[in-house]
Length: 261
Image (cartoon, rainbow, N blue to C red; front, side, top):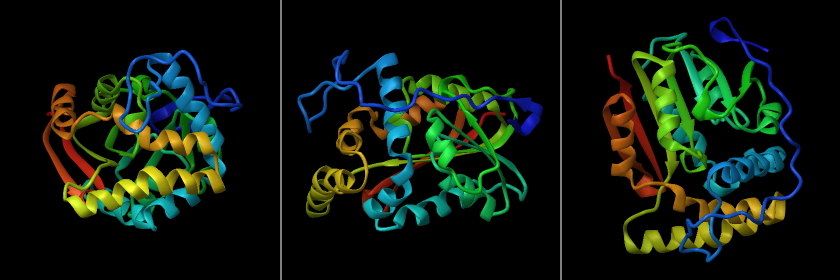
C-alpha cells in the first residue's frame, strides 16, 4: 500500500483471532478483578486478537457505550489541533477510522495506523492505512503535522516508547491531540459511571459483540497512568505546552501538546 511521504508499507495479515489468551499473565491487577492482566508481548498479542475479534461491531458498541458522545469529543479533539487546512495528520490506533474520517471532514489529510489488521480492513472511507505497532512506526522522522489517538493509551504495551515514536514522526511545532477514558470525581456522578462502565458496558458488549473483550475493557484502565504522569511522559518524549482537561465532568479526558522546536 502506498502511503504518505513516499513510504511504501505492506499491510500484512495478522493472525486471525481465535480466543483471547488466558495464560502467561504477569502481575498487574485491577480492582475490578483478581485476574492479573497480561504484560509485554502477551499483552500485545491479546490486544491484537481482541480488536481483530470485535472489529465488525466496534463502532456500534462505541455508540451504545457513549450514547454517541464519542463523535462530539473527536470533533473537538481534531479542532483543537489548530492546524492549517490540508495538513498531514497521523491517526495512531485508528481502529475503524472514526478519527481519520473526522480529520477528512475538517479539511485535513489523514493516514491511519493500527496494530489490528481487521480493524483497518473494516475502516470505511480511509484511503491510507498501515498496520503497525505504535512503538515502532514505519514513517520517516518529522513527517506529520499532527497526530491524533483515541482511547488507546491503556492498550499500548510500552506507552513511553509510543510517545517517543509520536514525537519522532511529528515535525517541530506539530500538534498532538489524545483522548482517553477517565472517571468523574464527584460522588454521585462517579457512582453512576462505575455502574455503567463496569456492569452495563460488559453486558452490552456480550450481547452484540465479544464477551471477553468487553469484560477486559473496564479492567484495562489499570494500565493507564494517572494524568500527571501522562503529562510527564509526554514532556520526556519531547513535547511541550502539554495541557490536560477533563471532558464532560470526567467521562473522558484529553491531552494536547506541541512538539518541541
